[in-house]
Length: 373
Image (tube, rainbow, N blue to C red):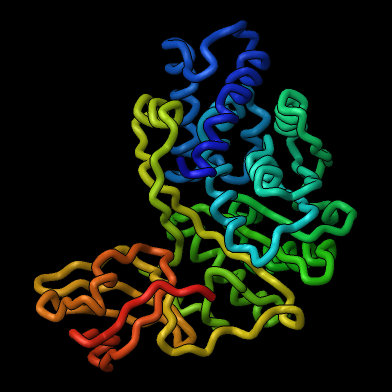
């Protein structure tokens, strides 16, 4: 079993236990909700889904202070955010010793960091109800978790020195709809770096919606002008080419088989969770960061397969920017066979291409290999 899936399965009984205590439900199965519980939580999940990914009328509101919504978040979105964070933490070059989780809610990213091997983690959020849930989870699991009440919009970043500062699904909910949202969000990331130890990183994780992803890319571009660079997943350190066309955005999509507990809740709520989608970026100070790769054959795949008659196509983003990569079916060979199996987020080296139209065309002699930065 994948270690992230294995670790997540161990959290489900604790989350259920905390939820039942908070709602005075008594005992129950440690791996599933009872029918009445399932209907109740699924109703909250549907409301959260509409409010955060549909009309987005809940974004920025104090929904974590509403017991039914906090409970729905705990049992559905907590495991999803935990899994997203564990995958995002894999992109760090080294394992941090200390981390600060801004806008932590009930702590999915904080506990993901602890499971990743971070020794000390501080969770900071404006919702005391959500922080109390995080505290209860930590007590039941015997985890050491520091907690700070923090109001992002009008308080300094909590004091301390950390190897990693994380913010999961936070920036998009701050200053939403305001004309100065981008500089204010970039300013928060800059203030987060005031708490980052030398050589440390800031990890930002945002929803994979077009609106929220493009907003994150706008923050990325502004940070570049202020000495803060995107280290992952970007291979390109100029203005993001995904913002050139209004129809483009950039996000990761990780194949995922959710635990049956999550799958059953998704079915009850009428949602689909066959993959983990997110916009995740790791930032570093420009003076402390490795040079951007200059290999023109290196690409991050930033689209789903774009199939058309007689050919396979992807969008790749590398040191030269965003480029279309295409292979005609008749040119499939042992050297380029991996091309047909590429997925969004893969890092590949593509050699032996020909400039054609608005991108690069692969031939039978082109080589496609998975790569590491």
